[in-house]
Amino acid sequence: MTRSRVRRTDPVVAVSTPATGPLTVAVTGAACSLGDHVVRALAANSAVGSVIAIDSSATSMRKRAAHGIDLTSSPTATIAWRTADVRHPSFAHALDRVDVVVHTAIGQDPESRAADRRAGNLEGVRTLLAAAAIARVRRVVVLSSAMVYGALPDNPPFLKEGDALRAADDESVVGDFVRIEDLVAQFALAHPQISTVALRPATI
Image 1 (cartoon, rainbow, N blue to C red):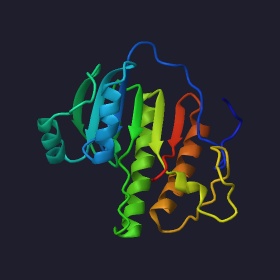
Image 2 (tube, rainbow, N blue to C red):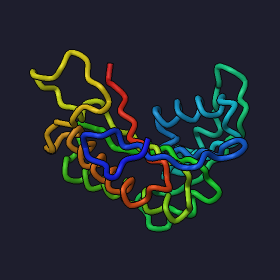
Image 3 (tube, rainbow, N blue to C red):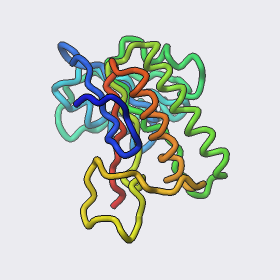
């Protein structure tokens, strides 16, 4: 699907040329619970040849790597660990020879100081997107949330992906995701050669 412009009401997806052969996929926040699940799923996917597990904490990564990854099915991909801070200007080096990057390193602690959490989240996404362009990554997947549609009484019973994103741009974690989606939409417009996805899982 192609479009002349991307709005916050549109699913943020652009088309790029698919990679040939097994993919190398990087996952940020790989030492946390969500990142761990993503690494497990990718390692068991036959389309993936290598998973680059990235986290800013070397201590957490060493513990995670030492524990190993207990896959429910036989892994088809190799897993390598890299220590890198997604907010650091040098982060592009962590994406060397990467086809796809999945960004799960987004702070969601509701008890954290809102200003600090938001600054860290937005800085991380900005740096990640810039790094993806520098490293010529084929596809960028950024974690968002279904809550960006807004929990409003006049919503239809079943929301579609293309429905308007109506959540308030407040100091909550959802407000962070609203800002993140704006950054992703701007990036998709500026870099149409990169397949750009805002992934909106629902909290159950």
